[in-house]
Image (cartoon, rainbow, N blue to C red; front, side):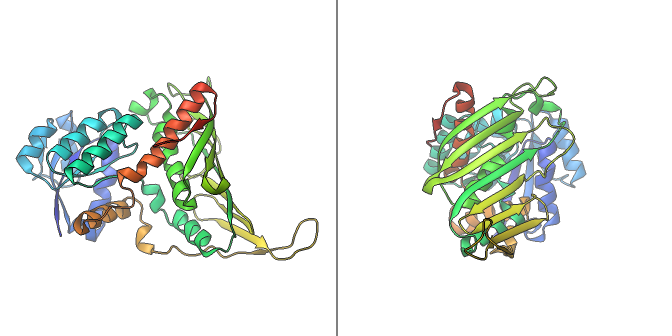
Length: 344
C-alpha cells in the first residue's frame, strides 16, 4: 500500500525524515511527498531542491495545501508551539499524522489531540526514534529473557554541550521538554513499567547559552517499585556522553552497562559466598526484531504499516502521553520543589 504525504515544517529536522525515506527502499517505494508546508516558502523550495521534490506543491497555508493535494499522511515537523494547530488541521482533513516530539506544548493540548484522532478515526503517532535504537532493543531483549533477574532500577546520564542556535536556545525547560523525553520514553520501553511520581531539580548555569532549564536531575518512581534516575545537561562542555545517554540497568541478579553507542558490559552473580559475590559475564542479547533498530526509518515503517493494517503503532499518541506526562511532571516538580504524582 502506497501513501501520499505532506511534510509540514521544512527546517533542519525535516532533513532527517526525508533522508530516511530516500535511503530506505521500503519507504521510498511506498511514500510520495506531494506537498511541502512552511511559513517560509523559501525554506520549502530549498528542501525540495535538495531532495529532488520538484513536483511537490509548496504552500505556506497548510489548510490550502491539504485541500489541494488531498494526502493520506501528514508528517509534522514544525516547532512545538505550532504543533497543536498543525495536527488538528491535518486530522480535520482526514489525514493520519506522524509528529515530531514533544507531541504537544502541554498535557492538555496532548490530550486534546489524542481525542481528536480518536474522533477522526485516524492514526496519530509520535517520532520516538531513540527507542528504535539497536542498543535499546538489546537491553529490552536481555531483560525480557530474565537473565538479569527482576528489574530493580535504571540510571541514565546525558551530558552534551550542544550549540543549536534557533528556537531551542530560547525555550524554557529546554532539556526536559526537547531532549529528555527521548531518554524517558526509552526508559518506559526498556522497563515496561508505568511512571507513578517524580522529584526533579532543574537549573541553568551562568555559563549556559540557553534561556532556561539546560540542566536537570530527576528521580522517577515506576510501577513494581522500580526506580529510574536521570541526570542531564545540554550545557556541559568537555566530556560528551552519547546522544542516547549512558545507562546502568540493575537487576536482582546483576547489572548491565551501556555507553549509548557500541559498548556493553554485563555481569551476573555466580556464587553465594564472599563479601563481594563472584561474578560471571552475561552476553547482551540481540534485538528481538532487527528490523526495529533503524531509528527514524523504523519509526516511519512502523507508522505506515500500522496505518495500512488498521492497528495502533508502537508510538501512538495515546501511549506517548505517558512519556510526555513524565516530562511535565518533572517540570512541575522542579517548579514547586515537591514530589509530583504523574497522571495522564
